[in-house]
Image (cartoon, rainbow, N blue to C red; front, side, top):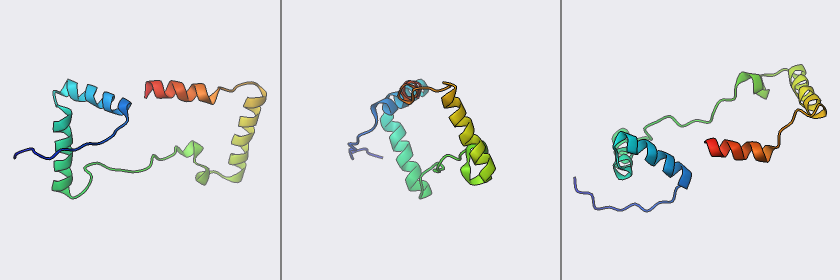
Length: 100
């Protein structure tokens, strides 16, 4: 089938870079991977993978906690703050972004 249509899209540069690294190892050009993705959408009539929100582990899912369990976890957090067992959130997120 002749390829004459052009897509112009914006993506996160880091996501693109990581995807290109994987595709390079597979020997698949980015344009071919996108063509494969679009073909699967047209063949299946849906996105070809499951899309869902991540499920919170039961140990931190407030909806599954009793009031006493919630208060105990909150108290532990306050105790950690008082004892200096804390981390700078900005630094933690920056490190996370570097790794992911």
